[in-house]
Image: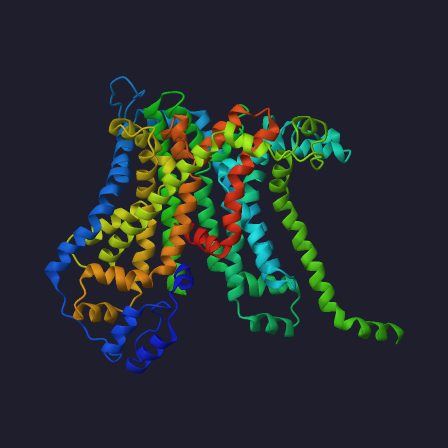
Amino acid sequence: MMGSRLEPRLSQYARTRIQVARPQLPVRILAKKHTMAENMLDRHNGVLPTARPNVWGKRLQGYLFIIPAFVLYATFFLWPLIQLVQLSLTDWDGLSPKHFIGLGNYRLLLFDDEVFWKAFGHNALWLLAAEVLPIALGLVLAILLARSPMRGRAFFRALYFAPQVLSSVIVAVIWRWIYNPTSGALNTFLRAIGLGSLQRGWLGDSLLAFPALFIAYTWVGYGFTMVIFLAALQDIDETLFDAAKVDGANWLQQFRHVLVPSIRGPLTTVLLITAIGSFQVFDLVFILTRGGPGFATQVLAMYMYQNAFPFSRVGYGATIAVTLGVIILVFSLIFLRVRNALREEA
Amino acid sequence: MNTDRRRRWLRPFRGFVASVGWTVIAAMIGLVVAVPLVWVVFTALKSSRQVSLDPLGLPDVWHWENIPSAWQVGHFERYFANSVLVSVPSVAITLILSLLAAYAFAVLSFKGKSILFTLFLAGLTLPESVLIIPLFYEMVALGLLNTLWALILPQIALSLPFAILLLYGFIRGLPKELLDAGRIDGCTEWSLLFQVVAPLCRPALLSLMVFNFMWAWNSFLLPMILIQVDSQRTLPAGLNYFQGRYVTNLPLLMAGAAISFLPVIVVYAIFQRQFIKGITTGAFR
């Protein structure tokens, strides 16, 4: 799906040139302006010849083209990854010599660490909530933008998407102020409309902190799903809806039998991307609650950070990082597999 | 009979009424999105006294001077400069290196190609938070801690896999005949890449540029861990530090927040199409 929207546009001139000369050639190439390509088409009268491959030159050149990217990637991605796995097998505190302790950290983490399982539970809960609230909201807004007779679609699309471009720190600063118990916008607003009894210390309350965090995330998170759904909705053939209307389908039936089946691919994609994101949650938690009060909002990335840096349990922090990486890897592999399946279907 | 006539009279207006109704609903939702941001700006322009007495009202005196004073107190010029100095090179280098690598993977043949490609693909699956611990000690060992290089280099390494994958798919979609014709005309691979292929990849490059720029600009974890001196902080890390110090001075804090998001919102308002497309493309990483 991503490919189709990024396909370069064909200049009319080049299109006719190719079609005349090579009717069997798939016509989906060439951007609007590119004199070089057009000149070539001209010179060869539209029939582009096949060159004899210069194997040796290419082979050397292949390495030359890849080496700069690979050196950077190996130094700042692959090497740290190897280091991480090594660290996770030690009891390193960041200063004294490392002691190899085998799988000791993993044993402790998986079988003897309540906080880890609490954090894992919070990530799982976050995943469940993120699969429902921002996605439903995004779908509703996409339907509003695509299918209601409203005015100013482009403006509202841009407005609804706007929080998505803000850094998580700005989002956190804003919501920290909204939730502030004394001068915060939420409590002040409740007082102003006479609901002062509902005032809370939102982020300091162990029951409310998690939902409060999640609301702040939702304010940002729906924008992405909305845009994905919007693109899918605009691709639906309008005659499908007309046919459903002629058959007497009400809006709910149209939703179930026309709309939902046509966005199945994007929906699956969004569900999986959300799942991956749910295990990466860090910035908002770090700035708003630091995992507290108590462990009420502790998540895996936060627990990893705390162990590795403030607590100086680098080896243990690395163990959490590896575990987190494996969880994300599993979701990513599912995602890649499903995406390929969807592509083949399309 | 009577009601029938009235309905007939209303019919031309029904579409209009529906469109106004739905636009009003859309505007109300828009308000929920925009109110926190607008409120931040209003609070930034109030006096400290008014903030505590009348937190919801409009500023009775507009204290425009709050913005420059927050700028000065918070050293935002430094943070902005650092953010630019990190984001621009990391995006530029990512685009050039990924274009080179993607071209080699898509067009050229050499030994070990598929292994190298798979290694790059592995990078798609892991976020920076997983690697932050070894990255920290690597930067210590390289003596790059507290320099902007500590942010630029990992940012490029993390951005490369997706950029390469996207451009690879794009270049594979180009007709082979085009490249062959170029070679017969005497193009080297190098000029073929930069004069034929790169211009054709413009839509993909543009999306990648927007996405990678936003990623680098908003990145928080890397500067939070790898930068511990104020002079090298980027905007997100700087704002976080600022809010820790001035949590009680609400107008100043909100002025700092406004300084951080207003430029982004303005640029976004101008290029929103490219932004939406770029960020959405990048999310498939």
